Length: 321
Ligand code: PMV
Image (cartoon, rainbow, N blue to C red; front, side, top):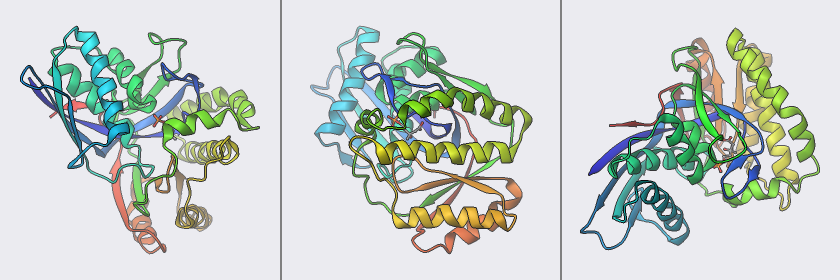
């Protein structure tokens, strides 16, 4: 059977950086994100006895070894679950540039998990699908449920999964995706996680992170935009402090990244309320209220180095299309 799905990118307010179990991709801390509505990956998977080997095409190109091996390993997990040996054809397309800090592995592995499991005849629950996606790329488990999603860290494969905490329509926030450059990141995220524990500040971050998560949940409950935004921005900078001081250290920002971060903070002093977040790359996510969206897009487009600003909002998780 051939199955085509869409899975969204997700943006974390409390980040996942560092693992308790590398092989099972169990995070060091529970974390929380929202699914985006538009930014994401469309993946088609087909299993057929006529195929002699797995084929993997991403964004119109046959995948190179490292990328292909990671996808084939995930197909093996799906085959093991279904107790089926058939080879697969995977065709995947991102509607945004990949490997530049826009979380293409989250949407990519969420899409592969849903499309692959359905195509092989499995009907996994949302929880089990999120566990499967987690094995492909940790944050992919947060792109399975819709809306506001918490990844409960758990202790093992069974207890580490994602669940919805609020529906996508709960709070109408806007998310701007600021694309600065398509230069590929220098260190892939999987390797970056390993560097985290080498930072002097890692243990301190871990001491406070559960409290920050509880606080973020309270801000969401109260729809306190300022509280949520300030915590998100500080949390992003806390994570980057770990990256900057890890072993090896990781500098994901470009000069234009810093320019956008400072512009957001300057505009805030003028009363234009928005907050930034950055993952493993140079590009920036910005959250704002609907009434400020157009004004911010206008201003962001004028910042030196900004190539494109995409308007997005909170959306659904992975689904068949
Ligand atoms: O799922 P991974 O291994 O791509 O890690 C995601 C890491 C961050 O994007 C930096 C943080 C997060 O929680 O999304």
